[in-house]
Image (cartoon, rainbow, N blue to C red; front, side, top):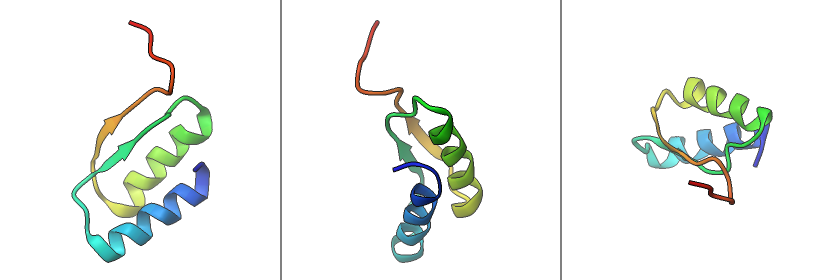
Length: 58
């Protein structure tokens, strides 16, 4: 998910489950970076883990 869809989903989960933090995967684009900031602001929870994408290079 990107952009507003990710924010809406995180808010819906938080409203029902009151989770402790956010895990973001495939944070490899500008839209997803903006979504990360928006999610942090909207749900007021820390981002606990961030992954860069599907391909991993050491």
